[in-house]
Image (cartoon, rainbow, N blue to C red; front, side, top):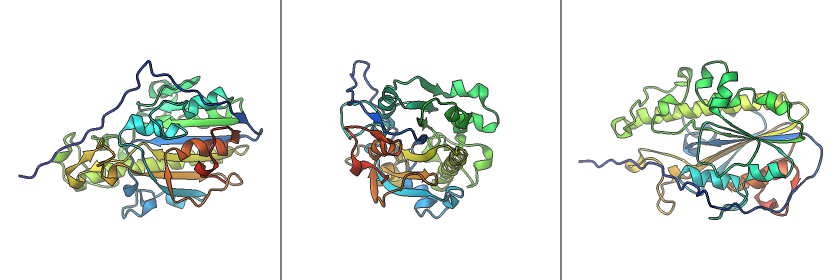
Length: 318
């Protein structure tokens, strides 16, 4: 009899008494209007993005976007809380240093956090918005999915009274096991799909089709963000998409995520790192493979924030 088992994700929830270590003060170096939209993807594995050579066209929009770059990257863990923490911190550590949104907010950057997910370190900013707060102002079928995070986003950026803006969108688009519920019906381009919470009862083809449709939907949302940023003519703009970790889809009879890094299959830690920049803004270095910690230093560089903890070697921008 063939043995099948599922590896479910787990979390190391942050203890309420864990003290955040503050970073040294930073300085906003110029008055040029700049905005970064950082999209934290959920369970998006690199192997299923056609930008990276996947045989199925899961990136029909992004593949046609100028000034778009994609890099190989590895997550620091295979579960959400550790992956998100790594994306937001300046270095890989077991300690809880001041994370990117808190640090920039404390140093006079306008920071917006929108989320349909959970598991981030404590976020200490003024504008923290869950989907429930965004729903009343959202219209269309996308409001029942992660597209709600984009509702009124361009207008919110334009309303900022600061020259530097960081928007973080924490999505849940590729979160299993019910991948088929994570996107509107019109994005079900690969069929048939798995509709069971017991992934072992689906064929691998059905499971992968459902998962691939979440990547198609991610492609659409990232394209929509870029279109919005292009309209902000007074801003130098960047969009960054980085996943918290990858996902197993039946390879070696593993499903979902959570395998310890020492024995984790590559599907659970090989992630996409996708970047778009507006015309006339920062140049992108010819990077090869990146870590999640590159995000912190790259955002500081793009927003021209000078800090003692900034590491030029960890920035993707020149």
